[in-house]
Image (cartoon, rainbow, N blue to C red; front, top):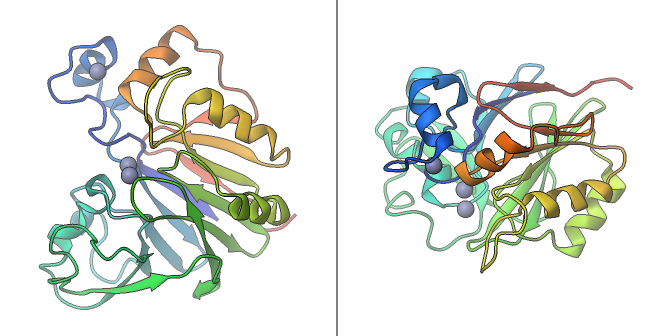
Amino acid sequence: MRLTFLGTGSAGGVPLWGCDCTVCTRARIDTSVRRLPNCAVLEAGDVRLLIDAGVMDIAERFPAGTLSSILITHFHADHVQGLFHLRWGTGSLDAFAPHDADGCADLYKYPGPLNFTHLSKFETFCVGDVRITPVPLVHSKPTLGYCIEYKDAKLAYLTDTRELPPATVSFLKEWRPHTICLDCTYPPGVEGKRNHFDLNEAIAIGADYPDSNMVLMHISHHLDEWLMTHPTIETEKFSIARDSEFIDCPESI
Ligand SMILES: [Zn+2]
Ligand SMILES: [Zn+2]
Ligand SMILES: [Zn+2]
């Protein structure tokens, strides 16, 4: 089972429009360090799932018939903006999403080929041979993480959250994923009201899951700037996601 990041950035991405910090300036020259909005594609057997749709060229990347379904974590623009182009297309594509009466703009009213199914937490469903369990997260909009299983491979995709609810923690401890992809938007010690984890919080969560590799994503330019002066933070257990990178989860143990 392979997860490939299409984007690994927080809302606004890297480079951030109008920002002249070291990271954003570098990213304008070196496209390899850019970060598009956080989203990924998961491939297992003949199933191919798009997880969130923040990139704007979904139609080019995935011609009709090449995606099995879309999993939407929540309806903030940086996670669904790519759907606004897709909906002018024809055909049919299932999109699984949390219950959110507001959705995003007029996406529910004019979904085009997108068939939305609203999910209940912890109710496992299947797309082909891939089992998916939505788990609740704490964010400024109704948000789901996805625990995805194929054969013995298990990966949890937990973006846009400032807290894991106790029921999600219990589920993950029992489920024991090989990999946890986790929101880590900020460098350590950012003050004020936040809707995302910082690096210290993400590392503390990793300690609760000794069997899991932690892949940190939804990275802001502030965290990238901090990482430039702390380059040794990555370990065998913790890695910082980069656009176009992939993670392979073993399908047999
Ligand atoms: Zn986001
Ligand atoms: Zn910047
Ligand atoms: Zn969000």
